[in-house]
Amino acid sequence: MTPNVGGFDRILRVVVGLALIAFAILAPAGVTWSWVGWIGVVPLLTGLLRWCPAYTLFGIRTCRGN
Image 1: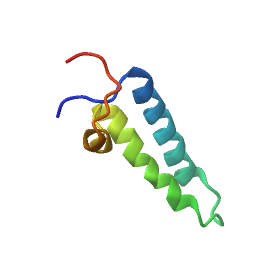
Image 2: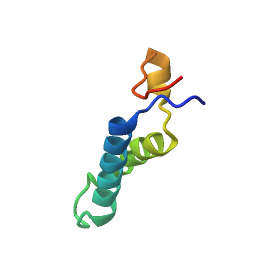
Image 3: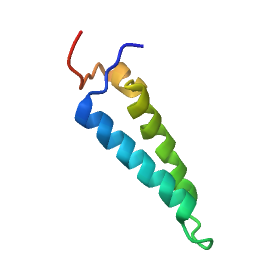
Image 4: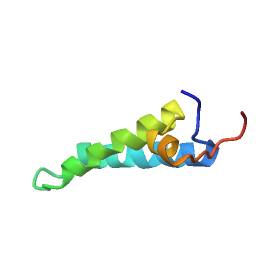
């Protein structure tokens, strides 16, 4: 897997992912939409791995280098 997620993009993905996961964990018991927060796992993982499968499909690269 060649990295295709760059610096700012990577930081943004990790922050958004952590925020969504925190929402899922810390949401009050009556909130029925708290499951949506677990979608945050996707941007968190793509940020940590520096690779996004959607970017590969569309030929997008936000990182410098090779």
